[in-house]
Length: 127
Image (tube, rainbow, N blue to C red; front, top):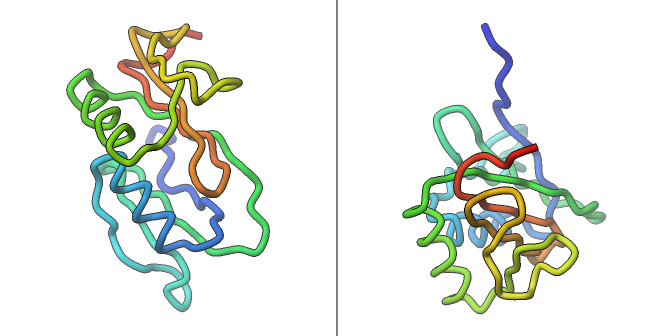
């Protein structure tokens, strides 16, 4: 069996709020609560990957990168704009309102309320 990423635990100050914001922007659904004592709020990304949001006192920012198609990207960009969330084409300047990503056709970065840098691109990034 090939190795695949099954889930990722993402620390947050409020797991339910973080999961809801993440799901809303990406056009996904909150899956519910899982784990011991239901301490994780989940967001299934696709058939193979689920993000588990966990409330913690200390959050160390993480970078998450997702590749998608143009129509899905356009929907995410529209929801970022509608929510007033700053985005940009550069991880050092994720608020420049540009989508001309240096490694792909288009893409953007934004920083969520917990400081995580989220990236969405059209197609996989060239290395």
